[in-house]
Length: 543
Image (cartoon, rainbow, N blue to C red; front, side):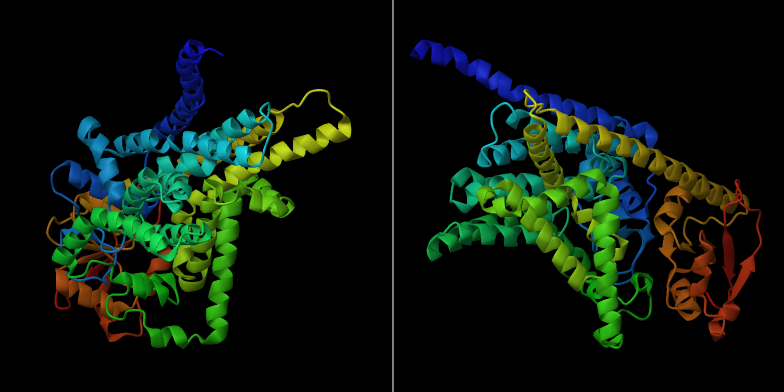
């Protein structure tokens, strides 16, 4: 080819290279925009927390919230400075579209959809790299890359993370981007080093599991055979860039909470039951943790392993996870071929995150610790599923002596199954979200009709974020450590009423306690729909 012909071909090559990722982004965006009408309510309270804080940021109040859900980190005041445990970036991300389209859940979902759709082209990029390392022929490699992008574009776990805005989606995207930059950064290339530092800093401001990505990068750099001084420089440069990005938030936390790091982190390691998160007087302790004995500790770890494998990976990921795990088992002998690739980085992160979470935070993970950090591992599973499906079709072609490669068969089948399961998952979430919205609105209406809503006296409740948003009044989490703690909390904040959404929450009141005489059940008309609601009045002398 002449030099002039080569120059003319470059734009065509660039355009053809962009077509696939742009098309994948468009498909993924459409799938995520569908959640705006399908999921009309933040049906878990963690998501409601992020959306509420985002609304306060967008309306000029800043990162605060009118609800207290944990009493582990002083000062305990209302409005409450947000993110004493969680990280802030998800709320700032949701606040951007709220500035343009109004402070609603739909605006937050729109922002998450636009941002999260980038996962599809990232998966395409990583799958294309893996196909090249595995020497997959040119007639099959594009199908592998596009199939991986489509799986991530329409797969249930990835689409639902835009429907229920929280830290899951932005952390997944930033972590996957970090894994793309990691091999080049481990070799000491300047641009990947800077990119990795920036992505790790932003990922840390989303979830603290970003530190596990730092460990994986250190391992990659060591495996690359870098001399000791080069190892220190590369790891140190990435750590410094990430720390500079996190520094403003650390300074804010020092000013507000007196510490740069969450005070509740240690509590979560010593939980014996998740309800201890809501304790007001007695906090989790090392002595109580050890008092479980070896049987109790190992039992919790076993429950965590089951939950994180079955409830977090297998059930939500369904066909993606199952095919990926089969691929890992059958293709284990070829693992060295992938070397220090982005795909291996994703798998290494997932292994570290799963191990640390199940061993050190076995009780906390039952309420979502690993679930919200497992996105990068599920992206790796999507890529592995397509690679495994492609290898299976190659075997079948050999057995059946097919004349054509039928390269698109496995990706098409996987995408069809994943899309079908995603529709089912989205339908179930939509039903749950609608039911929960009706319940919360019904309870709020019943409280207003009874004249129990006071802008200054916080309501004590088992769902403080939802109730605060629905009533416009401040709310406090129901303590888990008995009637004495409930009345002590009421005295501290001037509360007069306890509102329960769940019948099981009444167990927090120890009727044998002398303080229980302070609590009198108040009978008010039930909310529309007949949902459970119980209201207790706190005697004036007690509160």
